[in-house]
Image (cartoon, rainbow, N blue to C red):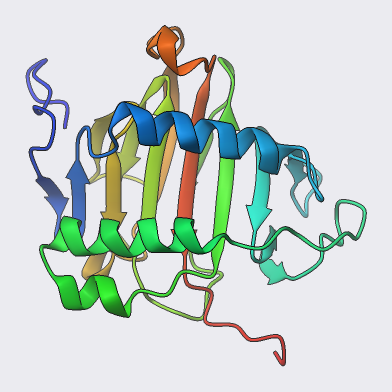
Length: 224
């Protein structure tokens, strides 16, 4: 959390709101590199990374690729009907397992981790000019926590309240390897990325820009 210019030490758990937990430096460098390599593979398809077009015609500045389920504003489908109609890649078991570990460690609750069953991931890429406005993650039928993993350039992550896009909110500095989990009373809090800090990634990571992986439970089945 940004607080008088001081940043939390690696591994020091912070709770900017009830049910919202920030763990700096949660992913070690080798796991970060593995995820970056995997993101590059996912970005090539079967449904390639793209700029999502919003219903009113706007285009998101981040580029996105989905796993498990395809997200298009504001619903999930197995096929990318807004991007060529192909079926999205499966969510790997190892990534779902990483999500369970994230929930268990963020909440210090092994049972919560074991119960977590993410079935989709959204991978967002931020170049130097990309932003994300205040929004809620509310297209899921499940209220299970959202797991967010940061890679590459650091950013300002604005975490708000469940009622309005405006204040009160807290600005949190997310760096490469950081974990942020939000669930419980904060599951439907508004949040945003108003800016990134280009050039702040470790060169050894081999990534120019920021990748954000969010794991979620959709609560959906193929039967509807």
